Length: 194
Image 1 (cartoon, rainbow, N blue to C red):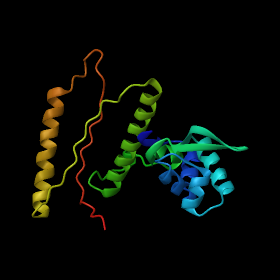
Image 2 (cartoon, rainbow, N blue to C red; image 1 turned 180 degrees about the vertical axis):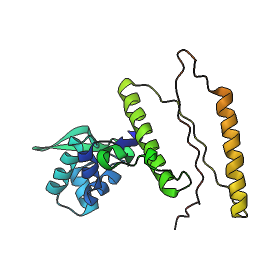
Image 3 (tube, rainbow, N blue to C red; image 1 turned 90 degrees about the vertical axis):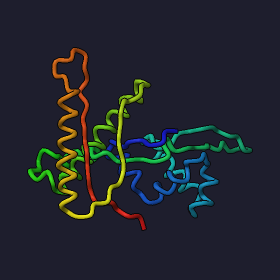
């Protein structure tokens, strides 16, 4: 089981968004059968089986084992990942495009950029899984408290200068066999969980 999987197929995204199927996915972090799940989610075993077949058809759950119980074969299933992210690719015709925004200080541009990040990294993860390779990535996550809006603006300016300096130091357009990497740095107000 993967820690995170990316859903790019619109039909798989639709299947995962059904409230009951979403509940089943969360329960199937640990292997379970339709019978054991029916008791947990309050549905008849046949209805659970219907949902499990739909999730299996879209690659969101997989067969772990089959157990023979009398005249019945019990299928034990597990989610293919502990959590899922729906890529903007699933909404291809309306996915956000950062190039359409002129205001690079807007929250909407940042959201479009984040959507592009999810789409690109999702594509990389999917490709790496097929070739059984790892994706070279790096990220920094932290919080900073600014005393004022002026301090925030000064921080953004200084950060931009530092990043520009680092990029010009390491960027080599003529490097034969080099590989382009995308760099995204974002600053936004922290969202407190309730």
